[in-house]
Length: 267
Image 1 (cartoon, rainbow, N blue to C red):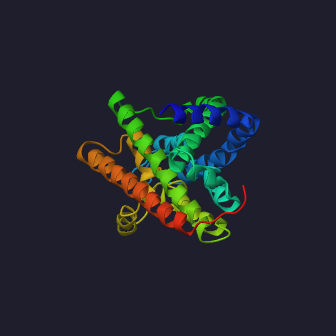
Image 2: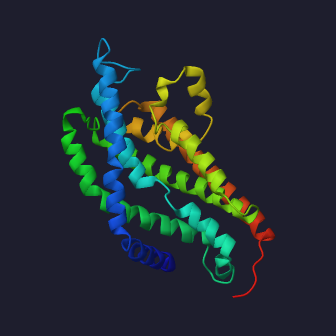
Image 3: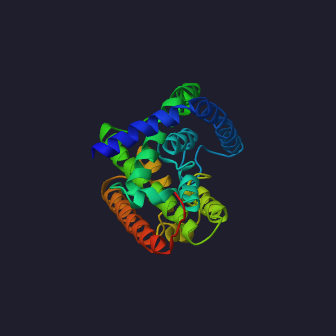
């Protein structure tokens, strides 16, 4: 384990080089959020009553604010591109000769990157939350905060394993950007990033729950809002954990097949 703590430490130091970039990214990332919240407020203002698909205006505002927080804590930014580059450039050869598991190596770098980005985004996001405090809903109790922490951990692992597996396509194709963008498009809509999924017709929502996408954002945010509790909460966490295990073994399987095809010269 010592070697992986060392990797995390190195990852934090390397990522801190780009801290200014992270600060600007987090600040300007709030502009689309402000536009989205303004759009929903206009929708509520032009509607009789204060309820859309079971959301009050405060809950809807909180939904997008929490989405931003969850995204900062768990999103995979450049890890998939870096993994694909390691494969194409032959950099993974060194991991085949050293007692370091490449998946765990990349997981450590992903975690260190999220720590630095979250630290850089903390101040601007906090200021934005204070400005929006009138329409910000707090978790109903501390138990909800605890279950949210569990779900966020599973969300981060799920996001990473899916992106890791997608990046491994570089073993077979020269350019993986098309596949990554297609996956991002599905995730952006089907994870609840664009809008709450329960706005969709029940049939479509039921189909989506057979995929891992709702458990990347929509499910943990609903835990925060107290819209998931009791048996539904435990079942959701169990399904989320199953997806994490499934994507982990899928990543391992794709890696093992890709290594058999991999070849590098020089170095």
